[in-house]
Image (cartoon, rainbow over all chains, first blue to last red; front, side, top):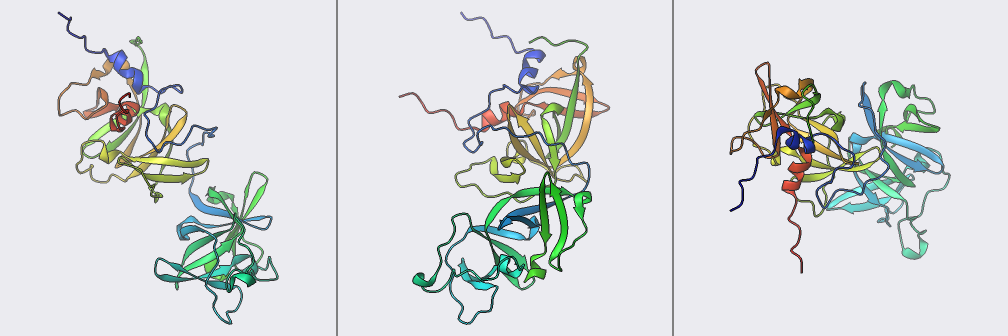
Length: 188
Length: 152
């Protein structure tokens, strides 16, 4: 006859409770592989979350709360005689959404992209390009950007006063990188 | 594993439903305000999506789906605990947070069995009239994981 199993002691029960870097994790399907994640200190001050993205060589950012979706850039439906920076429209699950050339609107590019109209007249869509669908007073609007970087949590104290035009709401530095914060409403 | 009678545990306390819980404070990397999660195709409860954080996406687990439900104490504000499990970070949605408290290990009680005690609770701390369930997060997730496929 087997001896009755001894209930685990408090020390044994606490073994899994206490943190160990080498502890074994359950096979939750969605857990990403462990990486070299930097430990991040808890925020000690108010922060602003922004989505950073690239336009040419520069890095810009807009408030994360304004971003509804991030779409892989694609050919758009042409609007005849549309004025730049309007590139065209896309059908966002039944909602016709205008898409604007953000680099052109900010004066970073002189010529508008040709990403709508007949296929033979369009230029190829760069693989990294994305459309940021943002919330505006007149409804969703798409912003064509060269690439999306990441979400950045900026302490308010790290955001400097704007300079460089009415669309710029602030300047922030992250390491050696400068983030130009913009208000899409003012750009458009 | 032996427990030093004089050992003092630093616990981070939080609320889910009607109960107060505590975890090893070394697990807690950040406490965040709730933010929208990105739905994750194929995710199953209690994982409810991905949080986009500096350093990459982090799966979020809704602890309300793992622990007894009920109304949290009045005034509780939901938060997201960004925790270390091994070398990974996992976010946990909770109904509110308490703070950090120090409890001598000698004052902890072994969690009684039975339906009253939530799963994965390994010990109970009773300090100043407040009862905290010491929660083994890794064990809790093991209980929520699909069983391994049978060999063959």
